[in-house]
Image 1 (cartoon, helix red, strand yellow):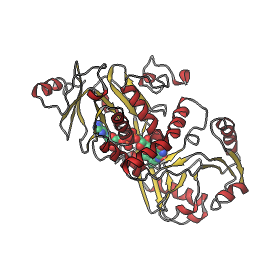
Image 2 (cartoon, protein in one colour; image 1 turned 90 degrees about the vertical axis):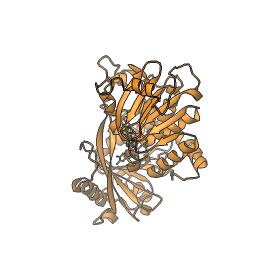
Image 3 (cartoon, protein in one colour; image 1 turned 45 degrees about the vertical axis):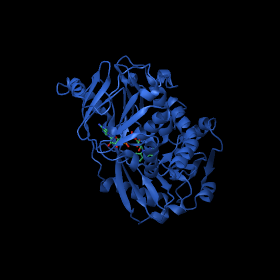
Image 4 (tube, helix red, strand yellow; image 1 turned 60 degrees about the vertical axis):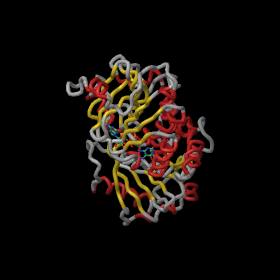
Length: 410
Ligand SMILES: Cc1cc2nc3c(=O)[nH]c(=O)nc-3n(C[C@H](O)[C@H](O)[C@H](O)COP(=O)(O)OP(=O)(O)OC[C@H]3O[C@@H](n4cnc5c(N)ncnc54)[C@H](O)[C@@H]3O)c2cc1C
């Protein structure tokens, strides 16, 4: 803990300056437990909605605007198979579980809020542009067919029947009929509304955390730069790429770092593509508003969120190569977001052993939209004192020197 923060919780309590004041304790009923969620992206909002449905008293502090970071920038693809090319490990199971939850989760969300999040079961095509690509596609077909139906390895002519706009250079594809996508900004907006209706207190523009301290018998005290100080029984860290801030205040190293994703959209060009299309260099997904979204770079640029000519240029070149009708067409717009990455690419979901009032739900890297319903369910379970159902393989313990490796448990 930094010297700066030492004792601020004590003075806060004495002065009665906290926005929430509850005595800590794990034996209390949900209705009397205050949960403070730090971060209002898709993970924070999904977790808040779930916690409120389970009866907790929930507040979300968002440093800036709800959904204004990675979650609002995402392409919205729900692709448990295309994102897991190697083996059916625990991460694949988490992705598949989350995807299976999506239809009911979205139905409930849309009924509650009256808003559409544009869930579309388009299926996906993982396209081979080189003979060598078939090797990995065949290996995937072999194991993935055990976890879903309708997978097919298509040759060039069958592929062209499904997607007539693909170039002659497309030699074939692995067809995954079950994959789907949403419009991510609309999903985040609907979740914000669902939280509001479920009684969650939503605080935007809270600024960064300026102090975080465990208080014996009281829980956790959090001081923000823009929204005063708060006391809660439990704190859930959902701060995306910024989640490493915890180490400034507690002796807990949260190994999350930003990986920039640059992405672009072609207005009016999405209607000619029927499936989500993945290649080794880029992906394309047609949205209901008629746009074709093409993503995404993966570059290390600190917390910089601007787009570069090089990043968008690479996507533009690949778009023209994969789909001749996009040759010489410039994207209508480009934007970027910061994916929250961990050292092994798996999310961090679990309680902190040194500070059990603190739950981490961050580091979702390329799959935070896909993983939000399952993550929210795990956060709800952890708040209720249950286990996560995955043997804690997503916990922070895996990064400690004595930690169990994920391979050992996966
Ligand atoms: C270009 C791009 C395309 C993507 N496409 C997909 C896709 O197709 N499918 C998919 O599943 N995933 C996709 N992703 C990944 C997905 O967007 C992320 O995994 C997900 O949005 C992470 O959600 P989050 O809530 O953890 O983070 P964020 O959305 O970044 O939210 C974190 C929030 O915390 C706030 N914050 C930061 N520090 C603090 C603090 N101290 N206190 C309070 N608040 C704080 C931030 O302001 C921010 O609003 C994509 C990402 C990018 C960049």
